[in-house]
Amino acid sequence: MHSFNGRPGSISALTLGLLLLVGLLSSPAWGDSELTIQITRGTAAGIPVAIVPFAGMGPLPVDVASVVEADLARSGRFQTLPRKDMPQQPTTAAGIDASQWRILKTDYVTIGRLVPNGAGLAVEFEVVNVLTGQRLLGYSIPTTTETLRLAGHRVADMIYEKILGIPGAFATRIAYVSIEGPPKTRHWRLVVADADGENARVILDAPEPIMSPEAEYEWEGLYPHGVVFPTANVVKDGTLFVYYGCADKFIGVATADFDELVDYVLQFPA
Image 1 (spheres, rainbow, N blue to C red):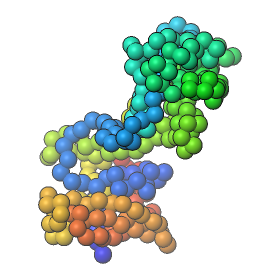
Image 2 (tube, one colour):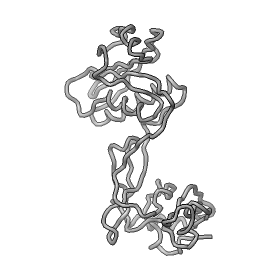
Image 3 (cartoon, rainbow, N blue to C red):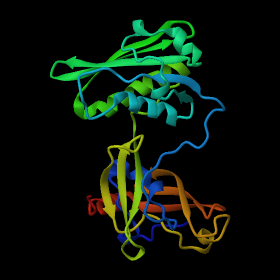
């Protein structure tokens, strides 16, 4: 059994709420990098859709339709039509000329508007199946200028679920580690961001990772450069157990006192 050596210096900084994301703080020899989320393989042919630019209230800080389009395209399940190829840009379902979209072999068209809503605004949108002429979805999402991106993610979630029958996850948040600085002064930042990597916020900034390859079986294996891959964890009787891969060849388990880890966490605010 591998352990965290029972000393604070071997335990990295994670907040209590994100403690079980320790798998993100393993330490192969990675350099500085910027988060890029890229789907390299999806379905053989994505469902053809068009997200028409949303009409609205003048210049706004976020192009909501672009957020929706990017979410669906990044999923690998949809093929989005470029704006320059759109035959029209209607703002209501009634304004859609289905025949023009069918020529382009587009199955679904989404149109929308941003409208005043009390002290804020609302994103109204509709989804039309241009093959049948059916209006599949119509909804209004209250929002503000500060939460427009989130509203766009919610629109994408609803479209994804309506067409595929599977809940979307674009409006969720992710956590990842950014490794900063040259090797001798390197530090690890725990970052929380939108699912597309936007609105990133540094939660913690630690001088070392929670786990690093030390034992021979962690350095020599199918991955020859020394790496540990934490994959699952559980807290039992006050002890955190982390199950991890060793150089992509063996499986190990590491342990740490949960309360000590939490105390150590609080030393490294961003």
